[in-house]
Amino acid sequence: MRELHADRGGVRRRDFSGARLRSAASDGRVSGIASAYGIDYSIGGGMKERVAPGAFAETLRERGAVRPLFYQHDWSDPVGIATFRETSSALTVDADLFVEESASARTVYASAKAGAFDSFSIGFVPTEIDKSERGVEIIRAADLIEVSVVVRPANPGASIEHVA
Image 1 (cartoon, rainbow, N blue to C red):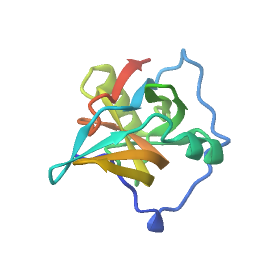
Image 2 (image 1 turned 90 degrees about the vertical axis):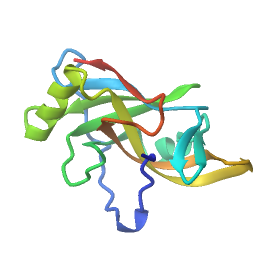
Image 3 (image 1 turned 180 degrees about the vertical axis):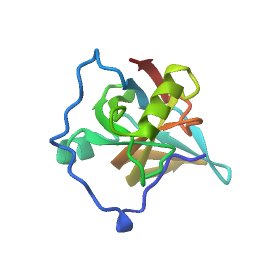
Image 4 (image 1 turned 30 degrees about the horizontal axis):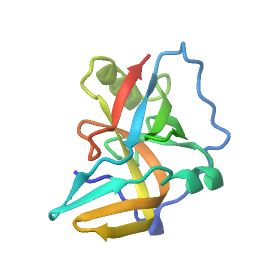
């Protein structure tokens, strides 16, 4: 499975800048690593991809750090709201699931709490790709669209580290 590279032509943007996360004590919070930097992972056809540190800095600065949270990249059913932060080693995420409003979110939460879902995966559109390394596409810049709770991520460093 490859990190989702969304086709922006058909994506209707929503403004999540006014969304607010619940307190850390609330049920329905998941957090962890949305994308680990510097790790090569397969994108099929014998090609590999690597996300470079700072790849999402511009999109987070321009569009803000809040994005929708989905299950398995199913855009028809948002299950929460996520806030991102870049560190030197990863794009991290803190998310609130819509456990009071959505049966899907309650299922995702219960499954994550039980350890059945233990990973995140991001949807993005690369805006700068470095192909200087044979067989590896290095994502230097990308437009971050969304994050999903998934069964199996493309980036092996992506993980859910905390469920509350």
